[in-house]
Length: 554
Image (cartoon, rainbow, N blue to C red; front, top):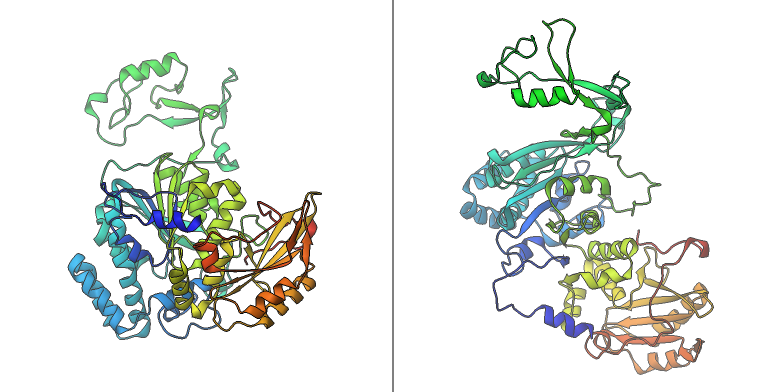
């Protein structure tokens, strides 16, 4: 009944719009964000975005017709979706003129510089600016936004964000050390960091919780005193006021006050004294200090330079092979610093879903948007792998096809990248995609009644050129893969000869009965007629390493 559920999701609400949380949106984030029904004003607590930008690649790779072999799937998707030709750039500028004239004028100035990189940067900033305006609209007055970029564009983007969010709401330029060293260190200082621009929507009242870094050797070395009274090591902290405090200028036990006064009242001074938390120099000309015991400290407060979060390595278990994947520790720090449990986190360029997984893990509500179905599919798989199949009932995907017409539209729209249609169709049967198919688009693993692992191979056909040859090839693939069964999902109706060859392919013997070894279903049958495949299992399982190489997307 999946098609009925999807139709119900598209019923317009009668009450005031409410944000849909724990949701993935497939499509252009600008189109989704402009829809006030789905993204009402002041509805998001925290926004993290890592927009597609690669300083090692010519910026035109995002906007021209020839992306080149080095372009990854997400770059191609941007090229297909946002063709930043002169007309598209002018359209974005016209919208900016109305919503943010200052930003529009800055981008116009940049585009007039004459060189190709300035023109490409202007186009990129046009794309970003109209989205940042919508992100500012949906952010709560108490909310914050973190924009992840690199030094090649960060100064341009900061100008845009100062205008949209207000320069008084700029909180930090966070530097994240993403690499240890680079080859370019032979000709200049090695470029090893990314920039994260942190803004709040309001000057005050926004949520922020200090983050404490694990106690390292440098931090521990500061606690070099010990009175051997059972309270352990401590360090000394000054009690001098950094600013003039005439009302806190008093003498204490013969010790003169600092020039600008103390930073605590006499009452607090006496309390600390009674608790044995004050250090008194032997010379009365010295300065009283406060004892900070190591056992009572959470650690060192994080600064705006993050060198302690290690970038993902090839051997890291988190690593999925996604070109711009960030470590979960990075997102967890941002989420814990600028939100409470139950808060709504939005990632409008969600990619492989690190912000989504981290939000779910930390008890936050989340929303992810991405223009590639590759990303949406990967986020769903990642949620499955991290939290189990039950997680599927806790979120929804919007933008999915829900009948033949919308499935055909997806296939027609993504002919340049057929994987979008394939990934969506594989999800209908819970099959994992295979990067290098060799005649196999997806694989399902299942355990029989004796706990033996078996495979089901899946092929997807979106075109209308169908013939029995497709079934014969599928039969050969099943034999080559030593699979239990083979499934064909077709957008269009198969021929009579295809059904005849499938029926003659034999059976798979399950625990209680036989199942057709080769089966065919159309998209209409799966979505609109509630006619699933006849399979000898209820839930698929991950193919463990001891049974051979895992089926991975990348």
